[in-house]
Image 1 (cartoon, helix red, strand yellow):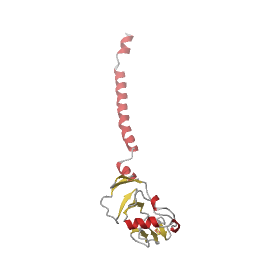
Image 2 (cartoon, rainbow, N blue to C red):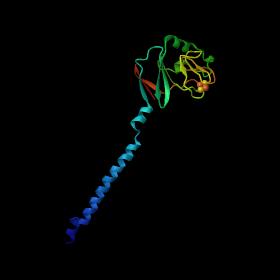
Image 3 (cartoon, rainbow, N blue to C red):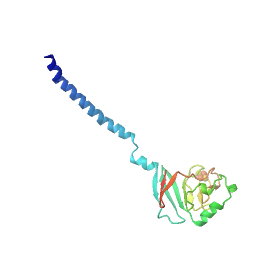
Image 4 (cartoon, rainbow, N blue to C red):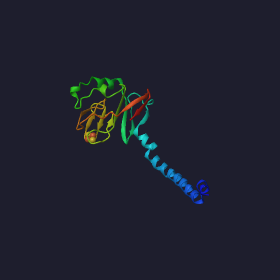
Length: 172
Ligand code: FES
């Protein structure tokens, strides 16, 4: 008789098993939202890097795209602008950097559009060097985004980027 009671689950055992199963399901249901919250959502991923179609940007033009909350300037440089940037002696630069170290392809300059003085957004095709001019306190940048005159201490920063195709750039 003792054997029968151990083989057949009692009503009490059944309730215990059923409760355990419900608890396991419940734990699963709670765990999923917590785990899914740990993944970065789509908008966070979009901010981490951004793809820019540059196919419609004509030579001489500048487009501004937003990346991680900052403006980024994409400039399709003309042959003259490239020549000026390349020919500038490093000795004339407050923050000496060769143009070739700032571009992956000479015709495309990509820089963060934040003045390195106090963070204003400089204006394109303006200033003494026709690169950018920051009207806040008068910083002049050249066609390589390098500081040439005024209080800004550094060149415009170059973000991480790569060409996905000839007409598409991924920034970040
Ligand atoms: S913030 Fe650009 S010159 Fe001061």
